[in-house]
Length: 159
Image (cartoon, rainbow, N blue to C red; front, side, top):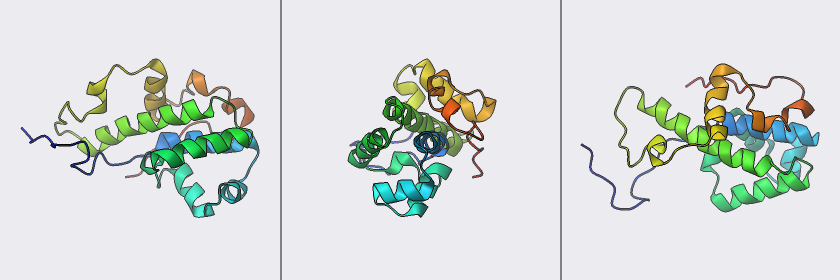
């Protein structure tokens, strides 16, 4: 059995994963009618940052909490639906569950650190976790999807 960290910050934490949250961010951006370049300009970040968030290469789970809250607020002020912040928080949680599963493979994960052992997840989180596999758009995202042309499924992770 592995030794438990003495503090919450003793280890590096779970590896980040951003496929679901990145795709939800893309849907939110598209719902505002902004391009990646225009969103980057409005957020005062480089366009490669927005591209990295949307592709999952730069997971939103790795964004500092205060910056994440500000990002969610800015999206709302730019015209994204009021539910966008909730969708992004849930998508980050789904990405964390997926990251642990992908990283662990067939190895044991201590229940003290496994996100599925921490609580019973709501149906909205479960729907986001299964979305990349099933292609079924989660019901809670339907306020984003009808406004957005194109694909409605996160791409599979290529790691």
